Length: 303
Image (cartoon, rainbow, N blue to C red; front, top):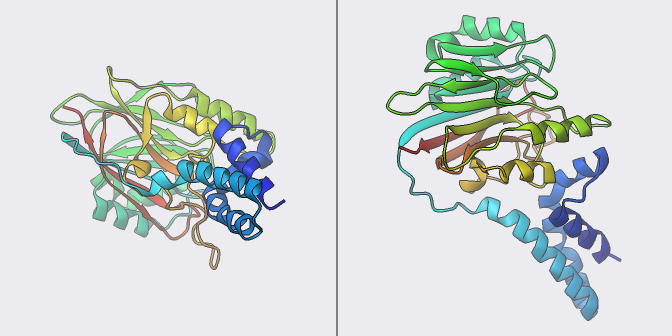
């Protein structure tokens, strides 16, 4: 009996069978299920039940193949123009302004993607000097969770890469020196709660594809999705890699942060990169005042 739940989980994960809000939310716990699936293997082996042992081993192997590679950095020797991307969900604009500015000064991103950007947060960030560091902006701020905005070192030209479903998701062309521009989208679909799960899936399915030709594209933000969601894997199938996954940092959780004794548990904030983009480094940072951790990616662009 101990084997059955993990075998079912493995089948659902591999086949993308999650349906409805509850199973979609549960799927974010797949890394923990993979670790826990070792217990039925031991129980079945001690009981000398060959059939149960075989099923338990198959489930553990399947879940392990889905999860373990995220902790293993892939060799990345790509060279080219550098691009640094930082993304952070500001939690209704409540993230500590000083901490955000300190992070920007320390990491020196070329572009900052913000979610839950309110008019109040825009004023506070500007007063603290953000526009001196990142003078070019494309902001769609709102007094709610729906606001988002891009800040950059270099000129931004608004684009309509896709039809946003859910929160504001500004996209822009970033005119970098020394080569072709990059297209970047600030991502923040609804969370898959209740009936919103359908809009969440539709939003992920609406994201534009990228490929070996045409402009390089990067999607950065709070996806409200992990790599264990079938809808998220469909995004990757359209020409993207998860930067943290490539850097061997794909199991570092980004939510919930700043919850006292409750540690971050799931990874739902991402920087997705065109497969032509090299990944040098990815790091995750806790910022006071918000329940999401910031994700930073140091990238190299194709010449």
